[in-house]
Image (cartoon, rainbow, N blue to C red; front, top):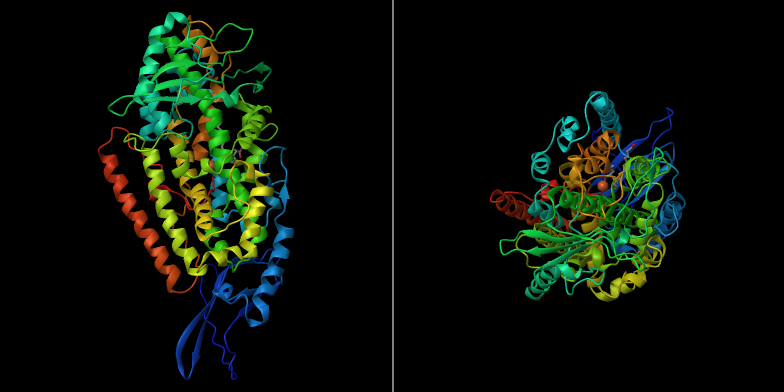
Length: 625
Ligand SMILES: CCCCC/C=C\C\C=C/C=C/C=C/[C@@H]1O[C@H]1CCCC(=O)O
Ligand SMILES: [Fe+2]
């Protein structure tokens, strides 16, 4: 067979073979590296009495060496308790092999477990980047590094003492929104907007009381009254970065960096704009003077620096908590548990596997190049040098099941029913569409709750995720078993939402919001201001230097850009299921996504700032970057 080619082979068999259960596939071992990728084997059965019948044996794996691959027929799971338990036995043997190939490892204490692999080269071939992806990933990274060298050269002799000097490195292709960020980043409504629809829409919550950490000095009693009035009106919001409190800051090239743990109070205006009212950069500390409150009425550079500190803090929680932990690392736990607990014929394996494509490789690359000793975080991020691991540990310790399910998370954060909360609106619509797709598929295989309760593989899968992969997460609301189809569907919907919509909503924005470095500084080189006397020199001495800014732009572009071999949500080509039932459910899923696509495109036409990260055609079918 040649590349990407189908070949037909006709075999006449005299005796009646009865129902076809398995097909065995063997490739002779000729050259050194001659692995072939088999999509599926389809057998057309012609019998005198009956019209021809198509019997499909899904594969979607590499066939290496001269081993024999035994493929069960696509509907095998429905007959798992029949045919002398042949399928059951096959599944057990398959899992025995998968458990040696995919093993849990503790990369760092206090984080979710990961796949055991020192580098991507140690991963099984079936989960590696295909050639095109590998070439693109490594090629664009190299090009990005060249970019940095050129920018460093270019700025060597020039000044770096005004905010406009960041323009010197702001060349190359930039998205329309990235250019808008450069133009509007100093504006308060633009600052507030990002908490709703920016790169990190996961932190904002509606206030239910004035935060205890918010100490208001007597001379600001007017502010106190304003905050209380907004609280009563139900339009007071807060963004609390307390997770960063006590985190050790990085040392970069011998220079101590600095961190803050801000609290931002904001008010929702009748026109939907979210405006900052006050910023406290550090929580009060007993024995020290109360931390100052920075206000929009402060001198402009003072207020700008206070907002920049919030943006730097948001960079940390976005990349570590919202992006790395709550999409990449959580998806990795789903992937490892799925490979270890669900045989290929299991319906939940078939439903999930397209949404786990490439995730083990991109995460292994993150552990060796991004958050590793000497990695990107150590090089240019102020939580690097070990603080980033403590942020991940603290975030893992408070990772709840509800926070991964938008209907619960948005309700808990008081973000339902806000017209200008576009991420919230689109996330809920996607959750409902994915939920219908999951229910439609699950109900084809689980006719009632008892079938779920008595499925040992899916119960083991749930337990392995919660108790092992997420390290005892039952204390944070994760299930250790499924008592009903509804519980199973809710959990699987969360898995698919996390691996697709949520990651796209969190990842894509890096391209737009992290290109203009002053809007999302990767590090801060001076301590947070404790008085209102701020000069431009202080601001420029605090924001990232040229090298740090260039590296941030390159990595943010590398991670945020469109992937060339991107598979849009719901448009995977692999056909793990067979029969009309699933095909109808998938078709409805794709129709629902098209409807949402049209809704979002139409809504965006009328917006000054369009929100497109959850546009279905832009959502990748798995976490690959
Ligand atoms: C300074 C910008 C850093 C922003 C990224 C921070 C966290 C991103 C979260 C998950 C990203 C996973 C991507 C992993 C990619 O393999 C890593 C690329 C590192 C660059 C390199 O290979 O040298
Ligand atoms: Fe990502």
